[in-house]
Length: 584
Image (cartoon, rainbow, N blue to C red; front, side, top):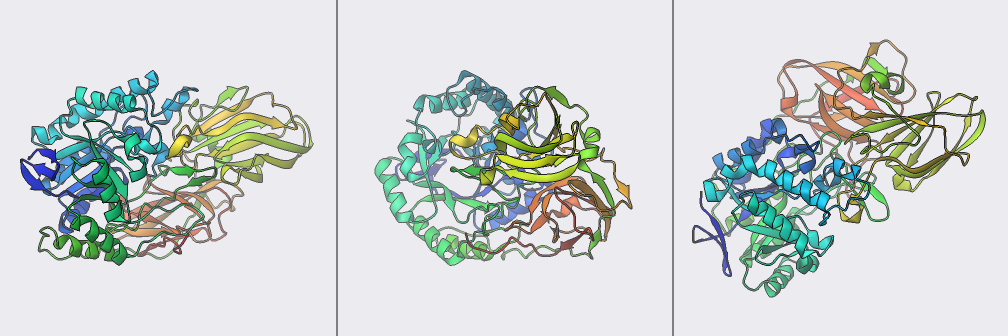
Protein backbone atom coordinates (compact mmCIF):
# COMPACT_ATOMS: atom_id res chain seq x y z
CA UNK A 1 0.00 0.00 0.00
CA UNK A 2 1.20 3.60 -0.63
CA UNK A 3 2.80 5.60 2.18
CA UNK A 4 1.35 8.97 3.27
CA UNK A 5 3.55 12.04 3.55
CA UNK A 6 2.83 15.66 4.42
CA UNK A 7 3.88 18.70 2.42
CA UNK A 8 3.04 22.40 2.47
CA UNK A 9 1.06 21.97 -0.72
CA UNK A 10 -0.96 19.12 0.74
CA UNK A 11 -0.83 15.41 1.36
CA UNK A 12 1.32 13.11 -0.75
CA UNK A 13 0.78 9.41 -1.33
CA UNK A 14 3.95 7.75 -2.61
CA UNK A 15 5.14 11.21 -3.63
CA UNK A 16 2.00 12.07 -5.62
CA UNK A 17 -0.58 14.70 -4.59
CA UNK A 18 -3.40 13.09 -2.63
CA UNK A 19 -6.69 14.48 -1.34
CA UNK A 20 -8.00 12.49 1.57
CA UNK A 21 -11.78 11.99 1.27
CA UNK A 22 -12.75 10.12 4.40
CA UNK A 23 -15.78 9.30 6.49
CA UNK A 24 -16.28 8.24 10.09
CA UNK A 25 -17.45 4.64 10.46
CA UNK A 26 -17.12 3.14 13.93
CA UNK A 27 -16.91 -0.64 13.71
CA UNK A 28 -18.07 -0.96 17.33
CA UNK A 29 -21.36 0.79 16.53
CA UNK A 30 -22.19 -1.50 13.59
CA UNK A 31 -22.99 -5.21 13.61
CA UNK A 32 -19.87 -6.98 12.22
CA UNK A 33 -21.93 -8.79 9.60
CA UNK A 34 -22.75 -5.34 8.15
CA UNK A 35 -19.22 -3.91 8.03
CA UNK A 36 -18.63 -4.85 4.39
CA UNK A 37 -21.92 -3.28 3.28
CA UNK A 38 -21.15 0.03 4.99
CA UNK A 39 -17.61 0.12 3.61
CA UNK A 40 -18.87 -0.56 0.09
CA UNK A 41 -21.32 2.33 0.35
CA UNK A 42 -18.51 4.59 1.56
CA UNK A 43 -16.54 3.92 -1.61
CA UNK A 44 -19.63 4.46 -3.79
CA UNK A 45 -20.14 7.91 -2.28
CA UNK A 46 -16.67 8.81 -3.53
CA UNK A 47 -14.64 8.27 -0.37
CA UNK A 48 -11.13 6.84 -0.55
CA UNK A 49 -10.66 6.45 3.22
CA UNK A 50 -12.60 5.53 6.35
CA UNK A 51 -11.88 6.74 9.87
CA UNK A 52 -12.58 4.95 13.11
CA UNK A 53 -12.03 5.52 16.78
CA UNK A 54 -10.93 2.59 18.96
CA UNK A 55 -12.88 2.13 22.24
CA UNK A 56 -10.30 1.18 24.87
CA UNK A 57 -13.03 0.32 27.41
CA UNK A 58 -14.46 -2.47 25.22
CA UNK A 59 -11.15 -3.87 24.04
CA UNK A 60 -9.69 -4.02 27.55
CA UNK A 61 -12.62 -4.55 29.94
CA UNK A 62 -10.20 -5.52 32.73
CA UNK A 63 -6.48 -4.75 33.04
CA UNK A 64 -5.54 -8.37 32.40
CA UNK A 65 -7.99 -8.94 29.50
CA UNK A 66 -7.83 -7.80 25.88
CA UNK A 67 -10.39 -8.53 23.17
CA UNK A 68 -10.12 -8.46 19.39
CA UNK A 69 -12.99 -10.83 18.60
CA UNK A 70 -16.52 -10.64 17.19
CA UNK A 71 -17.68 -7.05 16.94
CA UNK A 72 -14.27 -5.92 18.25
CA UNK A 73 -12.24 -7.63 15.53
CA UNK A 74 -10.51 -4.44 14.42
CA UNK A 75 -7.93 -6.25 12.24
CA UNK A 76 -10.79 -7.81 10.26
CA UNK A 77 -12.53 -4.45 9.86
CA UNK A 78 -9.31 -2.92 8.53
CA UNK A 79 -8.84 -5.86 6.16
CA UNK A 80 -12.39 -5.39 4.83
CA UNK A 81 -11.66 -1.72 4.23
CA UNK A 82 -8.54 -2.65 2.25
CA UNK A 83 -10.52 -5.21 0.24
CA UNK A 84 -12.94 -2.41 -0.69
CA UNK A 85 -10.00 -0.28 -1.84
CA UNK A 86 -10.21 2.11 1.11
CA UNK A 87 -7.45 3.57 3.26
CA UNK A 88 -7.92 3.89 7.04
CA UNK A 89 -7.38 6.65 9.58
CA UNK A 90 -7.00 5.13 13.05
CA UNK A 91 -7.89 7.09 16.19
CA UNK A 92 -6.95 4.91 19.21
CA UNK A 93 -7.20 7.59 21.87
CA UNK A 94 -6.64 6.68 24.64
CA UNK A 95 -9.51 9.16 25.00
CA UNK A 96 -11.96 9.31 22.09
CA UNK A 97 -15.01 11.32 23.28
CA UNK A 98 -17.35 10.05 20.50
CA UNK A 99 -20.43 10.46 22.74
CA UNK A 100 -19.25 7.05 23.97
CA UNK A 101 -19.35 5.74 27.53
CA UNK A 102 -16.58 7.50 29.44
CA UNK A 103 -15.03 8.75 26.21
CA UNK A 104 -13.67 5.23 25.77
CA UNK A 105 -11.63 5.26 28.99
CA UNK A 106 -12.04 2.00 30.95
CA UNK A 107 -14.08 2.29 34.14
CA UNK A 108 -11.50 0.25 36.07
CA UNK A 109 -9.17 3.24 35.95
CA UNK A 110 -11.63 5.00 38.29
CA UNK A 111 -11.19 2.34 40.97
CA UNK A 112 -8.15 4.43 41.91
CA UNK A 113 -9.80 7.17 44.01
CA UNK A 114 -7.37 9.96 43.12
CA UNK A 115 -6.30 9.02 39.58
CA UNK A 116 -5.96 11.87 37.09
CA UNK A 117 -7.13 10.79 33.65
CA UNK A 118 -5.63 12.29 30.47
CA UNK A 119 -2.56 13.38 32.41
CA UNK A 120 0.97 12.30 33.28
CA UNK A 121 -0.30 10.45 36.33
CA UNK A 122 2.08 7.42 36.27
CA UNK A 123 -0.82 5.01 36.82
CA UNK A 124 -2.68 6.38 33.80
CA UNK A 125 0.38 6.41 31.56
CA UNK A 126 1.31 2.84 32.52
CA UNK A 127 -2.22 1.69 31.62
CA UNK A 128 -2.08 3.55 28.29
CA UNK A 129 1.31 2.09 27.39
CA UNK A 130 -0.04 -1.41 28.09
CA UNK A 131 -3.14 -0.71 25.99
CA UNK A 132 -1.14 0.57 23.02
CA UNK A 133 1.16 -2.46 23.17
CA UNK A 134 -1.76 -4.91 23.23
CA UNK A 135 -3.60 -3.06 20.46
CA UNK A 136 -0.79 -2.45 17.99
CA UNK A 137 1.09 -5.75 18.27
CA UNK A 138 -1.53 -7.48 16.07
CA UNK A 139 -2.21 -4.32 14.04
CA UNK A 140 1.33 -3.58 12.84
CA UNK A 141 0.88 -5.52 9.57
CA UNK A 142 -2.06 -3.20 8.80
CA UNK A 143 0.11 -0.07 8.75
CA UNK A 144 0.74 1.43 5.30
CA UNK A 145 4.49 1.26 5.95
CA UNK A 146 4.12 -2.54 6.03
CA UNK A 147 1.70 -2.93 3.15
CA UNK A 148 -1.58 -2.30 5.00
CA UNK A 149 -4.27 0.37 4.59
CA UNK A 150 -3.69 2.42 7.80
CA UNK A 151 -2.29 5.73 6.54
CA UNK A 152 -2.05 7.66 9.81
CA UNK A 153 -2.73 7.38 13.55
CA UNK A 154 -4.15 10.08 15.80
CA UNK A 155 -2.57 11.14 19.11
CA UNK A 156 -5.22 11.64 21.83
CA UNK A 157 -8.36 13.54 20.77
CA UNK A 158 -9.26 17.22 21.02
CA UNK A 159 -6.84 17.49 23.91
CA UNK A 160 -6.70 21.28 23.60
CA UNK A 161 -10.26 21.47 24.95
CA UNK A 162 -9.13 19.62 28.10
CA UNK A 163 -5.54 20.59 28.88
CA UNK A 164 -2.26 21.95 27.54
CA UNK A 165 0.41 19.53 28.79
CA UNK A 166 2.66 19.02 25.79
CA UNK A 167 4.76 16.53 27.74
CA UNK A 168 1.67 14.31 28.12
CA UNK A 169 1.11 14.33 24.35
CA UNK A 170 4.80 13.66 23.77
CA UNK A 171 4.58 10.59 26.00
CA UNK A 172 1.66 9.26 23.95
CA UNK A 173 3.46 9.86 20.66
CA UNK A 174 6.62 8.19 22.00
CA UNK A 175 4.54 5.25 23.26
CA UNK A 176 3.01 4.78 19.81
CA UNK A 177 6.44 4.89 18.20
CA UNK A 178 7.80 2.34 20.70
CA UNK A 179 4.92 0.06 19.69
CA UNK A 180 6.11 0.19 16.08
CA UNK A 181 3.73 2.83 14.71
CA UNK A 182 5.84 4.41 11.95
CA UNK A 183 3.12 6.05 9.85
CA UNK A 184 2.37 9.78 10.26
CA UNK A 185 0.79 10.89 13.52
CA UNK A 186 -1.74 13.71 13.78
CA UNK A 187 -3.74 15.65 16.35
CA UNK A 188 -7.19 17.20 16.00
CA UNK A 189 -8.73 20.15 17.81
CA UNK A 190 -11.33 22.82 17.36
CA UNK A 191 -9.70 25.92 15.85
CA UNK A 192 -9.70 27.88 19.13
CA UNK A 193 -7.94 24.99 20.93
CA UNK A 194 -5.40 24.22 18.21
CA UNK A 195 -2.26 25.47 19.94
CA UNK A 196 -3.05 23.83 23.29
CA UNK A 197 -3.64 20.45 21.65
CA UNK A 198 -0.84 20.54 19.06
CA UNK A 199 2.42 18.64 19.27
CA UNK A 200 5.65 19.80 17.57
CA UNK A 201 6.51 17.64 14.58
CA UNK A 202 3.00 16.16 14.38
CA UNK A 203 0.37 17.17 11.80
CA UNK A 204 -2.25 19.45 13.40
CA UNK A 205 -5.80 19.25 12.00
CA UNK A 206 -8.98 21.18 12.76
CA UNK A 207 -12.54 20.15 13.60
CA UNK A 208 -15.55 22.24 12.53
CA UNK A 209 -18.86 22.03 10.72
CA UNK A 210 -19.42 25.50 9.34
CA UNK A 211 -17.56 28.63 8.20
CA UNK A 212 -15.15 26.35 6.35
CA UNK A 213 -13.18 29.07 4.52
CA UNK A 214 -12.71 31.04 7.73
CA UNK A 215 -11.51 28.04 9.74
CA UNK A 216 -9.21 26.81 6.99
CA UNK A 217 -7.65 30.27 6.71
CA UNK A 218 -7.01 30.20 10.45
CA UNK A 219 -5.48 26.73 10.18
CA UNK A 220 -3.24 27.95 7.34
CA UNK A 221 -2.21 30.99 9.39
CA UNK A 222 -1.27 28.83 12.37
CA UNK A 223 0.29 26.04 10.31
CA UNK A 224 1.66 27.63 7.09
CA UNK A 225 3.82 24.61 6.24
CA UNK A 226 1.20 21.88 6.78
CA UNK A 227 -1.58 20.38 4.67
CA UNK A 228 -5.16 21.51 5.26
CA UNK A 229 -7.17 18.71 6.85
CA UNK A 230 -10.34 18.74 8.91
CA UNK A 231 -10.49 15.49 10.84
CA UNK A 232 -14.06 16.09 11.98
CA UNK A 233 -16.25 17.91 9.48
CA UNK A 234 -19.50 17.92 11.47
CA UNK A 235 -22.33 17.25 9.05
CA UNK A 236 -24.89 16.30 11.72
CA UNK A 237 -25.10 15.96 15.48
CA UNK A 238 -26.06 13.56 18.27
CA UNK A 239 -29.27 13.53 20.34
CA UNK A 240 -29.82 13.55 24.09
CA UNK A 241 -32.78 12.32 26.08
CA UNK A 242 -35.40 15.01 26.59
CA UNK A 243 -34.43 17.18 23.61
CA UNK A 244 -35.37 17.06 19.92
CA UNK A 245 -33.84 14.99 17.13
CA UNK A 246 -31.08 17.11 15.55
CA UNK A 247 -30.95 17.35 11.75
CA UNK A 248 -28.98 19.50 9.33
CA UNK A 249 -30.18 20.59 5.91
CA UNK A 250 -28.41 18.46 3.25
CA UNK A 251 -28.02 21.36 0.80
CA UNK A 252 -26.50 23.63 3.44
CA UNK A 253 -24.05 20.90 4.52
CA UNK A 254 -23.18 20.23 0.86
CA UNK A 255 -22.42 23.94 0.29
CA UNK A 256 -20.02 23.89 3.25
CA UNK A 257 -18.37 20.77 1.84
CA UNK A 258 -17.96 22.39 -1.57
CA UNK A 259 -16.36 25.42 0.06
CA UNK A 260 -13.95 23.18 1.97
CA UNK A 261 -12.95 21.11 -1.06
CA UNK A 262 -12.65 24.21 -3.25
CA UNK A 263 -10.01 25.47 -0.82
CA UNK A 264 -7.95 22.37 -1.60
CA UNK A 265 -8.45 20.79 1.83
CA UNK A 266 -8.80 17.13 2.73
CA UNK A 267 -11.76 16.04 4.82
CA UNK A 268 -13.12 13.40 7.13
CA UNK A 269 -16.90 13.50 7.62
CA UNK A 270 -18.05 13.08 11.16
CA UNK A 271 -20.00 10.90 10.64
CA UNK A 272 -20.37 9.05 7.33
CA UNK A 273 -22.38 6.38 9.14
CA UNK A 274 -23.15 6.82 12.83
CA UNK A 275 -24.63 3.48 13.83
CA UNK A 276 -25.96 2.65 17.29
CA UNK A 277 -24.94 2.82 20.95
CA UNK A 278 -25.94 -0.79 21.55
CA UNK A 279 -26.41 -2.04 25.10
CA UNK A 280 -25.21 0.42 27.75
CA UNK A 281 -22.52 2.13 25.68
CA UNK A 282 -23.88 5.67 25.22
CA UNK A 283 -21.99 8.50 26.83
CA UNK A 284 -23.18 11.72 28.46
CA UNK A 285 -22.29 15.38 28.80
CA UNK A 286 -22.17 17.38 32.02
CA UNK A 287 -21.83 21.13 31.72
CA UNK A 288 -23.29 21.75 35.19
CA UNK A 289 -26.23 19.52 34.27
CA UNK A 290 -25.90 15.84 33.41
CA UNK A 291 -27.30 14.99 29.96
CA UNK A 292 -27.14 11.37 28.74
CA UNK A 293 -26.98 10.58 25.01
CA UNK A 294 -29.66 8.44 23.37
CA UNK A 295 -29.20 4.94 21.96
CA UNK A 296 -29.32 5.89 18.29
CA UNK A 297 -26.16 7.42 16.83
CA UNK A 298 -27.85 8.10 13.50
CA UNK A 299 -26.17 11.54 13.58
CA UNK A 300 -28.18 12.66 10.55
CA UNK A 301 -25.33 11.14 8.55
CA UNK A 302 -25.16 10.30 4.80
CA UNK A 303 -25.96 6.69 5.76
CA UNK A 304 -28.74 6.47 8.31
CA UNK A 305 -28.74 4.18 11.34
CA UNK A 306 -29.84 1.20 9.22
CA UNK A 307 -27.18 1.88 6.57
CA UNK A 308 -29.50 3.36 3.97
CA UNK A 309 -28.36 6.34 1.85
CA UNK A 310 -30.05 9.64 2.72
CA UNK A 311 -30.51 12.88 0.78
CA UNK A 312 -27.20 13.96 2.31
CA UNK A 313 -25.48 10.95 0.71
CA UNK A 314 -26.61 12.03 -2.75
CA UNK A 315 -25.81 15.70 -2.15
CA UNK A 316 -22.30 14.91 -0.91
CA UNK A 317 -21.66 12.50 -3.76
CA UNK A 318 -22.51 15.24 -6.25
CA UNK A 319 -20.14 17.69 -4.56
CA UNK A 320 -17.31 15.16 -4.37
CA UNK A 321 -17.76 14.44 -8.10
CA UNK A 322 -16.84 18.07 -8.80
CA UNK A 323 -13.43 17.56 -7.18
CA UNK A 324 -12.53 13.89 -7.56
CA UNK A 325 -13.56 10.75 -9.47
CA UNK A 326 -16.68 9.01 -8.15
CA UNK A 327 -17.63 5.40 -9.04
CA UNK A 328 -20.09 5.15 -11.90
CA UNK A 329 -22.33 2.76 -9.99
CA UNK A 330 -25.68 4.25 -8.93
CA UNK A 331 -26.56 5.31 -5.40
CA UNK A 332 -27.31 2.07 -3.48
CA UNK A 333 -30.97 1.24 -2.94
CA UNK A 334 -32.50 1.11 0.51
CA UNK A 335 -32.34 -2.30 2.10
CA UNK A 336 -35.41 -4.46 2.82
CA UNK A 337 -37.25 -3.86 6.11
CA UNK A 338 -39.32 -6.17 8.26
CA UNK A 339 -42.75 -5.38 9.74
CA UNK A 340 -44.59 -7.83 11.98
CA UNK A 341 -47.89 -8.04 13.86
CA UNK A 342 -47.76 -6.92 17.52
CA UNK A 343 -45.83 -9.30 19.78
CA UNK A 344 -47.29 -10.14 23.19
CA UNK A 345 -44.73 -10.62 25.97
CA UNK A 346 -46.30 -13.51 27.83
CA UNK A 347 -43.60 -14.23 30.43
CA UNK A 348 -42.29 -11.99 33.19
CA UNK A 349 -39.76 -11.95 36.03
CA UNK A 350 -39.55 -9.24 38.67
CA UNK A 351 -36.09 -7.74 38.99
CA UNK A 352 -35.83 -7.12 42.74
CA UNK A 353 -36.92 -10.59 43.94
CA UNK A 354 -34.85 -12.22 41.18
CA UNK A 355 -31.71 -10.14 41.67
CA UNK A 356 -29.88 -12.92 43.52
CA UNK A 357 -30.24 -15.21 40.49
CA UNK A 358 -28.75 -12.54 38.23
CA UNK A 359 -25.81 -11.66 40.49
CA UNK A 360 -25.53 -13.80 43.62
CA UNK A 361 -22.32 -12.12 44.83
CA UNK A 362 -23.71 -9.22 46.88
CA UNK A 363 -21.07 -7.38 48.88
CA UNK A 364 -21.63 -6.21 52.47
CA UNK A 365 -20.22 -2.79 53.24
CA UNK A 366 -20.60 -0.03 55.85
CA UNK A 367 -21.37 2.35 52.96
CA UNK A 368 -22.66 1.98 49.42
CA UNK A 369 -19.81 0.92 47.12
CA UNK A 370 -19.42 2.48 43.70
CA UNK A 371 -19.65 0.45 40.51
CA UNK A 372 -15.90 0.83 40.08
CA UNK A 373 -15.28 -0.58 43.57
CA UNK A 374 -17.57 -3.47 42.63
CA UNK A 375 -15.49 -4.10 39.47
CA UNK A 376 -18.47 -3.23 37.29
CA UNK A 377 -18.63 -1.29 34.03
CA UNK A 378 -22.26 -1.00 32.93
CA UNK A 379 -25.80 -1.64 34.11
CA UNK A 380 -27.24 -1.25 37.59
CA UNK A 381 -26.37 -1.64 41.26
CA UNK A 382 -28.97 -2.75 43.81
CA UNK A 383 -28.30 -1.32 47.27
CA UNK A 384 -30.28 -2.65 50.24
CA UNK A 385 -30.38 -1.81 53.95
CA UNK A 386 -32.75 -2.27 56.88
CA UNK A 387 -34.93 0.57 58.10
CA UNK A 388 -34.52 0.90 61.88
CA UNK A 389 -38.08 2.07 62.66
CA UNK A 390 -41.52 2.68 61.26
CA UNK A 391 -42.87 6.10 60.37
CA UNK A 392 -41.70 9.03 58.22
CA UNK A 393 -38.16 8.76 56.80
CA UNK A 394 -35.96 11.27 54.98
CA UNK A 395 -33.43 9.71 52.62
CA UNK A 396 -30.53 11.99 51.68
CA UNK A 397 -27.91 11.05 49.08
CA UNK A 398 -24.85 13.22 48.51
CA UNK A 399 -24.49 12.19 44.84
CA UNK A 400 -26.76 10.03 42.69
CA UNK A 401 -24.94 8.62 39.65
CA UNK A 402 -27.20 8.60 37.73
CA UNK A 403 -30.79 7.59 38.45
CA UNK A 404 -32.00 5.94 41.64
CA UNK A 405 -35.33 4.17 42.04
CA UNK A 406 -36.26 3.77 45.71
CA UNK A 407 -38.37 0.92 47.12
CA UNK A 408 -39.63 -0.06 50.57
CA UNK A 409 -40.45 -3.76 50.91
CA UNK A 410 -40.56 -3.95 47.12
CA UNK A 411 -43.01 -1.07 46.65
CA UNK A 412 -41.80 1.99 44.70
CA UNK A 413 -41.69 5.22 46.73
CA UNK A 414 -39.82 7.59 44.45
CA UNK A 415 -36.98 8.41 42.05
CA UNK A 416 -33.86 10.57 42.45
CA UNK A 417 -32.28 11.84 39.22
CA UNK A 418 -28.83 13.33 38.81
CA UNK A 419 -30.07 15.25 35.79
CA UNK A 420 -32.55 17.11 37.99
CA UNK A 421 -30.01 17.69 40.79
CA UNK A 422 -32.13 15.66 43.22
CA UNK A 423 -30.66 14.52 46.54
CA UNK A 424 -33.52 13.89 49.01
CA UNK A 425 -36.67 11.81 49.18
CA UNK A 426 -39.27 11.45 51.94
CA UNK A 427 -41.33 8.29 52.44
CA UNK A 428 -42.98 6.22 55.15
CA UNK A 429 -41.50 3.04 56.60
CA UNK A 430 -44.19 0.47 57.44
CA UNK A 431 -42.27 -0.93 60.43
CA UNK A 432 -38.86 -1.51 61.92
CA UNK A 433 -37.01 -4.11 59.87
CA UNK A 434 -38.50 -3.07 56.53
CA UNK A 435 -36.11 -3.28 53.58
CA UNK A 436 -35.00 -0.14 51.78
CA UNK A 437 -33.81 -0.93 48.24
CA UNK A 438 -32.20 1.60 45.90
CA UNK A 439 -31.74 0.53 42.28
CA UNK A 440 -29.17 2.81 40.63
CA UNK A 441 -28.71 2.98 36.86
CA UNK A 442 -25.49 4.04 35.17
CA UNK A 443 -27.00 6.10 32.35
CA UNK A 444 -23.63 6.64 30.68
CA UNK A 445 -20.32 7.99 31.94
CA UNK A 446 -19.47 11.56 30.94
CA UNK A 447 -17.44 11.62 27.72
CA UNK A 448 -16.29 15.25 27.51
CA UNK A 449 -14.55 17.78 29.74
CA UNK A 450 -13.42 17.50 33.39
CA UNK A 451 -16.47 15.38 34.22
CA UNK A 452 -14.83 12.26 32.74
CA UNK A 453 -13.88 11.25 36.32
CA UNK A 454 -17.43 9.93 36.52
CA UNK A 455 -17.87 7.17 39.08
CA UNK A 456 -21.26 5.46 39.29
CA UNK A 457 -23.66 4.38 42.03
CA UNK A 458 -24.39 6.19 45.31
CA UNK A 459 -21.43 8.43 46.12
CA UNK A 460 -20.60 10.20 49.36
CA UNK A 461 -22.81 10.12 52.43
CA UNK A 462 -26.17 8.37 52.40
CA UNK A 463 -28.31 9.27 55.43
CA UNK A 464 -31.62 8.13 56.86
CA UNK A 465 -33.07 10.85 59.10
CA UNK A 466 -29.59 12.32 59.41
CA UNK A 467 -27.84 9.09 60.41
CA UNK A 468 -25.90 6.52 58.42
CA UNK A 469 -27.53 3.06 58.25
CA UNK A 470 -25.82 0.15 59.98
CA UNK A 471 -24.64 -1.30 56.66
CA UNK A 472 -25.48 -2.02 53.06
CA UNK A 473 -25.78 -4.93 50.68
CA UNK A 474 -24.35 -3.92 47.29
CA UNK A 475 -25.28 -6.16 44.37
CA UNK A 476 -23.85 -5.44 40.89
CA UNK A 477 -26.31 -6.08 38.04
CA UNK A 478 -24.35 -5.68 34.79
CA UNK A 479 -26.97 -7.66 32.82
CA UNK A 480 -24.30 -8.98 30.49
CA UNK A 481 -26.32 -12.21 30.28
CA UNK A 482 -30.04 -12.92 30.60
CA UNK A 483 -29.64 -16.69 30.85
CA UNK A 484 -30.55 -16.96 34.55
CA UNK A 485 -33.69 -14.82 34.60
CA UNK A 486 -36.52 -16.91 36.16
CA UNK A 487 -39.28 -16.14 33.66
CA UNK A 488 -42.78 -17.38 34.41
CA UNK A 489 -45.97 -17.26 32.34
CA UNK A 490 -49.43 -16.20 33.46
CA UNK A 491 -48.38 -13.90 36.32
CA UNK A 492 -50.17 -10.57 36.80
CA UNK A 493 -48.43 -7.46 35.52
CA UNK A 494 -45.63 -6.76 38.00
CA UNK A 495 -45.40 -3.48 39.90
CA UNK A 496 -41.89 -2.13 39.56
CA UNK A 497 -38.86 -3.26 37.54
CA UNK A 498 -39.38 -6.50 35.65
CA UNK A 499 -38.21 -8.43 32.62
CA UNK A 500 -40.82 -9.40 30.01
CA UNK A 501 -40.29 -11.98 27.27
CA UNK A 502 -42.13 -12.97 24.13
CA UNK A 503 -41.58 -14.98 20.96
CA UNK A 504 -42.19 -14.09 17.32
CA UNK A 505 -41.74 -15.72 13.94
CA UNK A 506 -39.63 -14.42 11.06
CA UNK A 507 -39.76 -15.88 7.56
CA UNK A 508 -36.75 -14.00 6.20
CA UNK A 509 -34.55 -11.77 8.41
CA UNK A 510 -34.26 -8.09 7.51
CA UNK A 511 -33.59 -4.87 9.35
CA UNK A 512 -36.45 -3.71 11.54
CA UNK A 513 -37.25 -1.27 14.35
CA UNK A 514 -38.62 -2.17 17.77
CA UNK A 515 -41.34 0.25 18.91
CA UNK A 516 -42.30 0.32 22.59
CA UNK A 517 -45.34 2.57 22.77
CA UNK A 518 -46.85 2.54 26.25
CA UNK A 519 -43.63 1.48 27.93
CA UNK A 520 -41.74 3.96 30.14
CA UNK A 521 -38.02 3.29 30.51
CA UNK A 522 -35.63 0.40 30.25
CA UNK A 523 -33.62 -1.79 27.90
CA UNK A 524 -34.42 -4.34 25.20
CA UNK A 525 -32.75 -7.43 23.76
CA UNK A 526 -33.53 -9.56 20.69
CA UNK A 527 -32.15 -13.11 20.72
CA UNK A 528 -29.82 -12.00 23.49
CA UNK A 529 -28.41 -9.08 21.47
CA UNK A 530 -28.58 -5.81 23.49
CA UNK A 531 -30.43 -3.22 21.40
CA UNK A 532 -29.98 -0.44 23.96
CA UNK A 533 -32.08 1.86 26.11
CA UNK A 534 -35.56 3.25 25.51
CA UNK A 535 -37.24 6.09 27.38
CA UNK A 536 -40.67 7.60 26.85
CA UNK A 537 -39.30 11.14 27.31
CA UNK A 538 -37.83 10.85 23.80
CA UNK A 539 -36.90 12.02 21.31
CA UNK A 540 -36.05 8.49 20.19
CA UNK A 541 -39.11 6.24 20.08
CA UNK A 542 -37.77 3.10 18.40
CA UNK A 543 -34.71 0.85 18.59
CA UNK A 544 -32.82 -0.40 15.53
CA UNK A 545 -32.68 -4.19 15.13
CA UNK A 546 -29.93 -5.27 12.67
CA UNK A 547 -30.96 -8.05 10.30
CA UNK A 548 -28.09 -10.36 11.42
CA UNK A 549 -29.56 -10.40 14.94
CA UNK A 550 -32.67 -12.17 13.63
CA UNK A 551 -33.01 -15.73 12.39
CA UNK A 552 -35.51 -17.52 10.19
CA UNK A 553 -38.06 -19.17 12.46
CA UNK A 554 -38.67 -18.41 16.14
CA UNK A 555 -37.07 -15.38 17.74
CA UNK A 556 -37.16 -13.90 21.24
CA UNK A 557 -37.54 -10.35 22.53
CA UNK A 558 -36.87 -9.35 26.14
CA UNK A 559 -37.76 -5.99 27.63
CA UNK A 560 -36.57 -4.74 31.01
CA UNK A 561 -39.17 -2.17 32.08
CA UNK A 562 -37.95 -0.18 35.08
CA UNK A 563 -41.38 1.13 36.04
CA UNK A 564 -44.58 -0.64 35.06
CA UNK A 565 -45.46 -2.32 31.79
CA UNK A 566 -48.80 -1.43 30.27
CA UNK A 567 -51.50 -4.04 30.72
CA UNK A 568 -51.30 -5.42 27.15
CA UNK A 569 -47.52 -5.98 27.35
CA UNK A 570 -47.08 -5.74 23.58
CA UNK A 571 -44.28 -4.44 21.37
CA UNK A 572 -44.13 -3.93 17.62
CA UNK A 573 -41.50 -4.48 14.95
CA UNK A 574 -42.02 -1.94 12.18
CA UNK A 575 -40.26 -1.16 8.94
CA UNK A 576 -39.59 2.47 9.79
CA UNK A 577 -37.78 4.18 12.67
CA UNK A 578 -39.02 7.02 14.85
CA UNK A 579 -36.17 9.22 16.07
CA UNK A 580 -38.58 11.84 17.32
CA UNK A 581 -39.52 15.42 16.47
CA UNK A 582 -36.71 17.66 15.27
CA UNK A 583 -35.42 20.71 17.10
CA UNK A 584 -33.71 21.45 20.38
